[in-house]
Length: 213
Image 1 (spheres, rainbow, N blue to C red):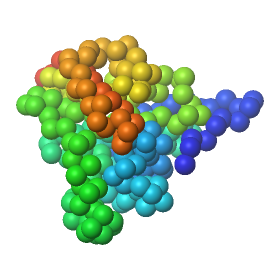
Image 2: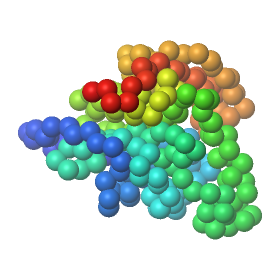
Image 3: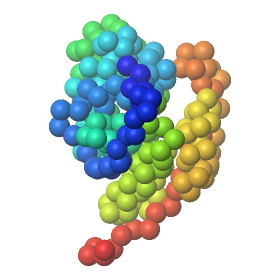
């Protein structure tokens, strides 16, 4: 499920950023998402052979911005807006996929990751970039496109959460104008989910006036 490494001597094409997961790329999007967040989501959705198809089947494709190279999906950033986020699936979907006995436990774990936006906020639902194309600025491009979506939707800020075991992601967010506003210590989750603190970060965006270029 890892990203495809670029072959030696090849020069990948230009990066194209678009809104929405391309039709037919849902499984690829789920693979990327699981590669980035499988450690955190594993206790709720493992095993991977069940988790990835579940994510693919319940993606809200219009709640992502995507990066493509030569037509191949290599990165995506999900976001929540108007009550819908990239990763979908209702409680009944989880129970149907995992069974009622085990499903109830999984629902309790998934509830730990829910983040509801305040008025005027767009909440990011994770960012993932193929390991083979990292270092090309794709994460930054995705963040700027998410900010553009927020502005066009009348939101005044983008909010995200970053865990303490992902300093690389936090550094990217800080370079792109996000600032930490709160850190929640969760040492009781370290053994279960692999992290012991979650930092909330925010970035202000200028609301785009209707008809503005």
